Image 1 (cartoon, rainbow, N blue to C red):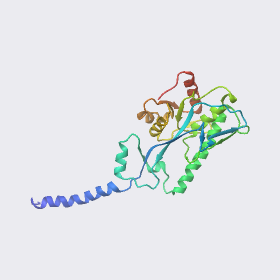
Image 2 (cartoon, helix red, strand yellow):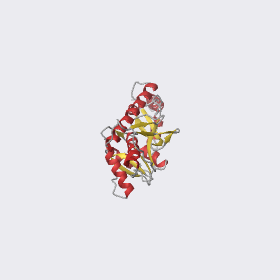
Image 3 (tube, rainbow, N blue to C red):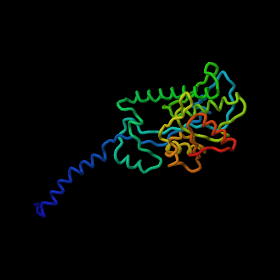
Image 4 (cartoon, rainbow, N blue to C red):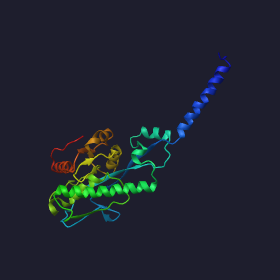
Amino acid sequence: MLSRLTRPRALALCALPILALLAVAAFAPLPFTIAHPGSTADVLGADKGRAVITISGAPVRRTTGQLRMVTIVATGPHSDIGYRDVVRAWFRTDQAVLPHDSVYPAGKSDREIEKRNLGQMRRSQDDAVAAALDHLGKSEDDVDVRLHLADIGGPSAGLLFSLGIVDKLAGDGEGGDLTGGRIIAGTGTISPDGTVGAVGGVSLKTQAAARDGATVFLVPRAECEDAEATRPAKLRLIPVTTLKDAVASLEALADGGRVPSC
C-alpha cells in the first residue's frame, strides 16, 4: 500500500503520460477539412467579361433576374487541422467539419486534385447541355452551347447551368422567364437525363446565396433536412429531383402558383 507521502507523487507520475497524450492530440493534425460559404456566380451573366452561357444555332431570349450557382471554400488538401480547429468550427453555423477524404481523394497531389475538379466541372457542363437540350426537345447537332466559368471546379453547378440554358432558349426568343426577375440560387449535380443529385455542403451554400441577395434556393430533395437546419431568414427552399421539377417550380413561382417546399 502506498503511504500518504508517496501516493500523490505516484498519481502525478501516472498522469504525466496522459497529459502528454492530450497535449499531442490538441496539436496533432486530424483527418478533417473545414469549409465555409464561398462565392456565387450568375450563370445568366458574365464571368471576367465573358458570357457564362453562349448559344448559337437558335434564337436566344433576353433574360431578367439571376440564376446563381454557389460554392463552398475548404481548407487546403494538406492543411493541418487540429483538435482546437475542429471544436471551434463544430459550434459555428458558418463553418462545417467534413471528413478529409470526402473533399479530397487520398494520396493525390494538389495538381492532381485540381485536375480532377476541373475534369468534373467539364463533364458536368457537358451533362448540363445534354439535359437542357433534351428537356427542350432540341438537338446538339443544331444548337451549339458553350459554357465558361473560370476558377471553379466540381460538378455541383450542373443544375444551374441547365436552368440557364433553358431560360435563354425557352420560347425561341419570346415568352417565359424562369426567374421572374428574382435572384435565384441553387445547387445540384445533373445527369444527361435530367436527374438532380446531391452535392454536400448545402447548409453553407444557403448562407452564401442569402449573402449575395438570393431569395429562393433550389436544393436536391435528399438534402432538404440539411438545408432547412440552418436556413437563413427570408430564403425560400424549393426541393427538386429532376430538371423538369426545377423548371416547373420556377414557372409556378413566377406565375404565383403553388410551389413545393422542404
